Image: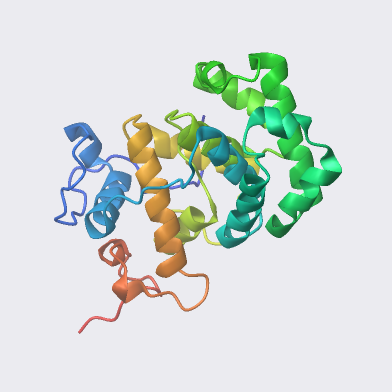
Amino acid sequence: MSHPSVLPRLGPVSNPPTSGAGSYPNAPPSARKSLLYSYFDALFGAHGPQHWWPGRSRFEVIVGAILTQNTSWKNVEQAIANLRRANLLSPLAIRRTPIAKLAVHLRPSGYFRQKTKTLKAFVAFLFANYSGSLDRLFATPTAALRGQLLALRGIGPETADSILLYAGKHPVFVVDAYLRRILERHSLLPAGSALSRKGYEQIRSLCESQLPADSQLFNEFHALIVRTGKNFCRKRDPACSECSLKAFLPANSPFAPPLL
């Protein structure tokens, strides 16, 4: 896959900036020549493991990945709590529950009618193709399973990749609006880039090419990106001077902290 005008500075570099953290133990030396890995190293050194995705089971993680579309995690937690109280956090329980009843439980997540249909579609797919077994589902090769998930109603690339990474431990890099914002502000992505499906796939493919295929590293990196996007690289009033990635901002960036 080509990457025209996408992430032009993200390839291997001979002397990448360093954070001094050196904290993630599993990356091979070759990965440390990647600028993207230097970003991860700085974030991991500053914030440590994120213990994400929260969920008591793989199926709960899948449900969360579907429900978190276009809403806050707080709203997702309310919907999952409803499902837990009703003993509906299993594929079989969701399969047996009428759509109208299920929709009531999912209402706090927003767009609950569409999400009810998506959850139902996923469970129907799970039983039709894998006899309801998550073990069999996640034993499927990554590329084949990703294609199957993307063919389901209401599941786009970010949701599919979250399911693969967090529930299935497949080494797939999750791209989201937080990552796009960080890359834009660091001049690694053209300003105003839309996260279209083509753009998503370009960013994902290139990011994966610059990092070791380690599901735990991808897990931590995405969680750290979310933390950074929420707390530092905010859409409004960014706190760049407090961010562990401030050393990587180009000198001419309008977001670079002023020199003392």
